[in-house]
Image 1 (tube, rainbow, N blue to C red):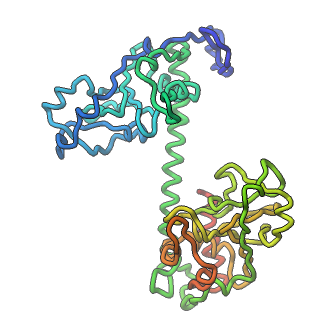
Image 2: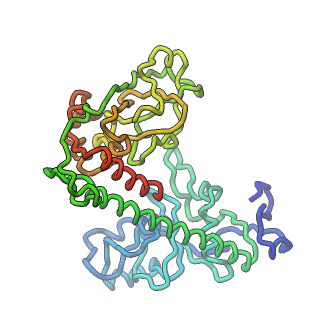
Image 3: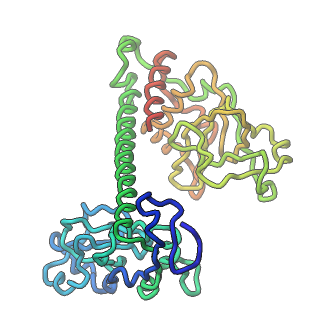
Length: 408
């Protein structure tokens, strides 16, 4: 939509039947809906909650847009006392604490209950399309208005109800509102369907991995491709037996960094559960050419696999995952990040997939040391045991799991 400051606007993209329908009109949110802020915090105390009864709607319901589960319930007398805060079908609830500015529509047959102090309830007037209003309130420009700066601090807070009422939304006629909302809703349904398919594929892969690799204490997997069922037991060796050479990152100081250069640094966060190096996970980090030239043993190309043996997070979520990347670019390793060049005794994709298994992850957790910064010593890591089959079976397993990764 245009950034033109006026009482009316026209979007840059419009459905054909509405191109001559005139400009959109600015309406204050107070004209569009009625507001009810959740009761004061002392009204809903934990000592009054019961196991079953009338539900207490929380900010988690606005964030997840799911109403299948409730943590707290109140009795009928309390529900009648708080009738003003009761939810009705097609009410719009907004989170006002923690993760703020999230909206959800109360379904047609909701669980009878009331909102808590962390929610704002909006009841849309009949001449406005509910879904259109929700999508409009989720626009960045309106989110900025909803989340005002708190006095004397840097923490964002939801604006007061009086301020929210004065937020101006630009509105077409009802028919155009419905057309836009229907278009966006159909995309949301498609996104939801693909998200569900994605979750199912991830679960399928996780289950398959548990069967394609031997369990703790076992020498063969529970599921094996037909041509390898008589191939014998997997051999237990050390990770270091497959390493031809490795490189580790050198310490970087603030003076080594620049805003941009050809020398991009691989951070620890770029190594995760995926197959490939994820360099888009955070803002790129670059260092000076002088650092690059002095630390050639910290430089890797696509002939290396990448892992990390150090993490600031106590649980070490990324430690030990192995990834690869394709292309001609050379990267600089951050401290605690390693480039590993394998010999021909193991398939790289097989080792990458093994690094995602629960068995491997438990092994990583068992050898981590440290408190505020956890790590695994090189000497320990390269001596860790790994079970491997023949190269053809490695290739078959890697190809099977990699095909699922491509779908994911």
